Length: 240
Image (spheres, rainbow, N blue to C red):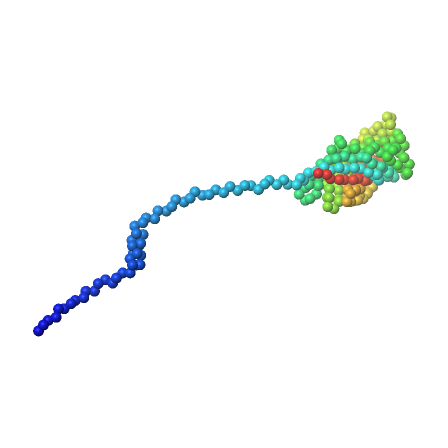
């Protein structure tokens, strides 16, 4: 009986797609590649230019005080002198404070206040007799000005030299007072000022307590100790 040849089919590995071969090859190559970290780049230094310097608005300026007509002076219980101090005054420096107020200080050596005398002063409508004169010599004038409200307060110290010609020259009267645009009140005398207006005009009032000066005539004539009332009409301006 004829026997047919037996053919055995050995299964072969399935054909691997080309794409899989490529992926495998890439995987093997990747496994052989050492990844060397790249040296970090040097940090970039950015130079920032500082903002341009800004100049702060100046807080210092010049202050000018001018005395005008309508001043007055009263001593003890006597009637007030009507005093024209037009043409007097001086300049100084002003510095703005943190609260917005201005501290002003005048050079006392340059502050000029006209003498109380025949050409400037009347008493009860009559000019002061020519031999009588009071020379006012400031020692200091400084204080605070509020330019927003117009309030002014100036510490004023001065020597008042009374004389009747060359025959009689007693020691000076020492005046130490606060000149203010508000109210001033002493033991006997009092006065009220007025605040700065838009043009810088104001009225300052101050009362000083005069002490005896060890001169028999003057101490008794003025009834010292007593009050001295000063009323100053003035114009105050600020310039840069």
